[in-house]
Length: 197
Image (tube, rainbow, N blue to C red):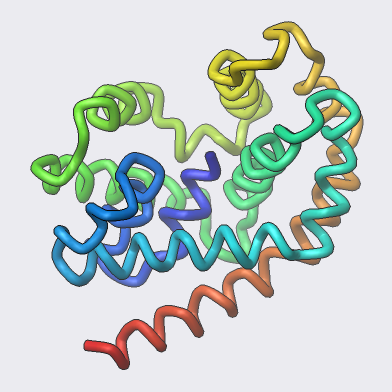
């Protein structure tokens, strides 16, 4: 769900493709892709494992779990993209815009690796510039509603966005405690992947 974070925590174009592909492929198919794309898939999984075990993320889940129980993690992912998009210590507004445009370009240039479902989503993502607009309250509201709409066992009217607004300060603190460690983890994981070449 956290498309911006996964696209940001990459170190070459192939990894961008792999980071996005991971949620759309079967595990047995991962080795059919070029090495850089495989590395992106591996990086995605490593990021998810690190995130799931992080104390700050466990704290953030408590904001949403009374409303959505086991789906709390998906809403935390979306929330973290909001704070990342607003993090000017990592990128300027112009830099975030350039990052978004680069990701769409790289994905479109590698469409031969993308599933039909992903291509449809990518067209919407690019048209509405999801990656850049995560910084806006309306952008994150849209993303939260999108998760609700796709969740099989959740009522579509659960006030998750209101919970986000009411707890924005606490969620920001979770992001501040979490993301520097995640960035360091991703860099270390990438260094290991480069040694395997």
